[in-house]
Length: 117
Image (cartoon, rainbow, N blue to C red; front, side, top):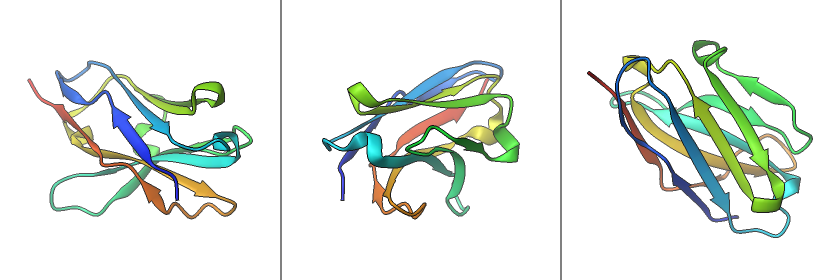
C-alpha cells in the first residue's frame, strides 16, 4: 500500500472554490489509478472523481461540470479543483489509490470541506 496525505480543505461559502491536493509516497506513482471519495455525516462514502494511470477521468453526476481532477506524476500528486461549491458538497474528502484494477485500497486521512454561508 501507498501512504497518501491530503491537504486543502476548509470552510467556503456557496459558489466558492477550493483545491484539494493529495501527495503519495511511492516511486511508481504514474502506475497508480487515483481517486477522490467523500463521506458526508451519516452517509456512505461515495466516489467523486477518478483519474486512471493513463489519464482517463470519470466523475460522479453530482459534480460534473463543477469539479476537475488532475495529476502531476513528477510531483506524485493528484488534485481536485472544486468550483461552484454547494452545501451538499460538505463532507470529508479522501484520496484513494489503486494499482492494477480500479479497486482503491490505499487511503489518506481525509480533509474536511464545509460549504456554508
